[in-house]
Image 1 (cartoon, rainbow, N blue to C red):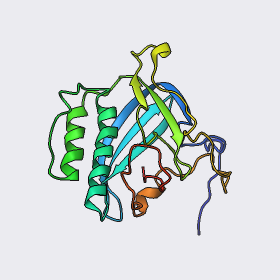
Image 2 (image 1 turned 45 degrees about the vertical axis):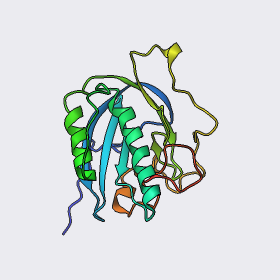
Image 3 (image 1 turned 180 degrees about the vertical axis):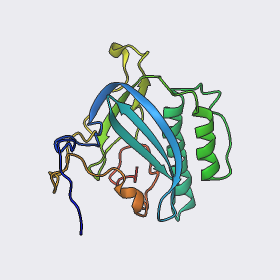
Image 4 (image 1 turned 90 degrees about the horizontal axis):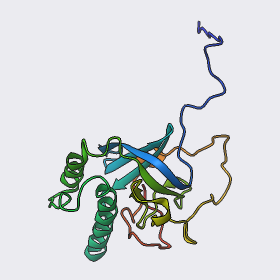
Length: 204
């Protein structure tokens, strides 16, 4: 026989998961960088940012494409995005290396940033992806040190930034599950160009 125990220790009003909303946020902290493999055997690098208990997860899958030239373009644009993040915590000189695989590339970034990002507040721009998930934009700039005076900030909301969802949520949840895509195959434009486009959204 099943037993159900209900008492006042059960919090039925609060929510366990809080996610950073769209907009430009100050005093955001990078709290972890991890290399992982999805259930479908797709490797990815995931950054987790946090502000006042609210989190933003940003994933970068290994770029894939049948066209070699397009693949190289995707790799370069991914490098631009990752360098944009990394050089807010280390110098450009330190972010200078070669890797012979995506796994090595990700683990080198993790190694170089470990111990360098803790406790460093950033100003971050958050938008909605084409799949209605909060994410960093595909194009730079989207992060800068809080040492940059607000009046000199390069971050701004522009017309191409998606700040509202295409449609209301179909459930009562305040946010879609940001880990949902981790259980799916990445779309073909994973690691797409770091410029505005009409292609399907990245599986960040």
